[in-house]
Length: 432
Ligand code: HEM
Image 1 (cartoon, helix red, strand yellow):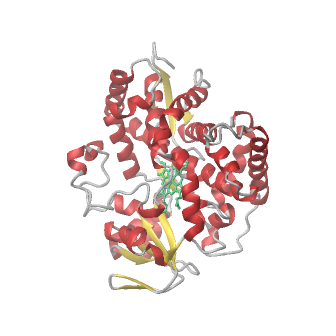
Image 2 (cartoon, helix red, strand yellow):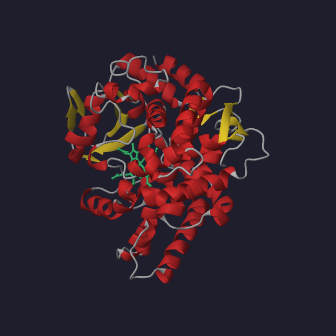
C-alpha cells in the first residue's frame, strides 16, 4: 500500500494523492508514516466534531517550532486560551457581515484595477491574477492601505513566506535550510511596521475606528503584537481567497454551461451596475458555484492540532504530543456523505438538498469556536469579484492538465510554475 500511495503522490503531483490512497485502504483514522512526524489523520463528520467541538479543550493549536507559529508569533491563528479569545473579540467586528456593504465598492474597485491591465493580453495565469486581486482587496479594506505601489516589491517576499509555511522538508527535518526566509520576513515586517507607524500618526482619535488596522492601533496592543495580527490577516485572508477564486474560474472554464448560467444570472440581477452588497442574495446560482468550488477544492484542506493530553477517538488511542489532523478535503469527497463525490454539481447546494447534508460533512471554513474569522468577508468577496469578472469577460481554459498542489493552501497547478492558464475575452458593451 505504501508503494501505491507513493505512486499516487507522484502521479497526482501532490501528497494529497497519497492521502486519498491511505483513506481508501485504511479508513477514517490512520497514522501518517513519516519519520519524526507523529501524526494521526481523522476523516469524516464525527472526527471533525471531535476536533473542533467536543475534544477542542484537549487539543492545542500547534507546537512551538512549527513554521506557521514561528512566522505569526502571537497572531490569533496560533494562540490558545484567553489570549486567543481576546484577539477574536478584537478582530471580529471589522470582519462581521454587517461591514460588507462598506467594503463592496472597494472590492469592485480593486478587481477593476487588476483587470484594467488585461485588455491587450494573451493567456493569463488566473492564480497570479487572483492573488493580486485578493491582496489589494484585503489591504485596501481591512488595513485601509493602498498596496499598489509596493505590490511588485513585496510579491517575492509573500511567495517566499507562503512556501515556508507549506508542507515540506521541515516536517521530517526540523533544521532543514530555509534560504531567503529571513530576508522575506524582514521585507514584510518593514512594510507592516511602516503602515502601523503611519496610522498611529495620522488617525483621528475622535473618528470611528472603521478598519481593522485603526482598531488595532487604538486597542493598546504593542506594535509587535499588531504586526502579528496584520501578518496573520495578510496571509490567512488572501491566500485562501486567491485559491478559491482561481479554482472557481478553473471550474467555470471546465464547465462552460455553468459559466453561461452564472453570467446570465449576473446580467439579470446586476445588469450594467457595479455589483454591491444589495445584489448578494440575488445571485444564488453563483453562490452554489462558490460552495461547490469550496467542497471540491477547499483552500484549507486540512486543519491541525496537537494532543495536549492522552486522548481517545472511538477505540483509537492518541498519545499526548501527537499531531491531530482533520482532513476537510477527504471529508468533502467522502463517498458515504456525498453522492458522486468527484463530480462538479453546484445544485448539491440547493436549499432542499443542503438540508440532507450531515452536520460537519461540509466545513470549508472549519467549525466551532476556532472557525474562520473571515468567513462572511470571504464569501461576499468571492461573489462580488466573480460577478464583476463575469460581467466584463469570458474565460476559456488553456489546454493542459491541472493538478492539485499542496502549498500553504490547495492550489491549481498546470506545470512549468503556472497555476491555471486561461484566455480572457472582453465582452462587447460590458461595463468593465
Ligand atoms: C475562501 C476563503 C477562506 C477559507 C476557505 C478559509 C478557511 C479557514 C479555515 C478552514 C479555518 C480554520 C482552520 C482550523 O480549524 O485550524 C480558518 C481560520 C481562520 N481564518 Fe479563514 N478562510 C478563508 C478566508 C479568510 C479571510 C478572508 C480571513 C481574514 C480576512 C481569514 C482569517 C482567518 C483567521 C484569523 C482564522 C483563525 C481563527 C482562529 O483560530 O480563531 N480567513 N479559515
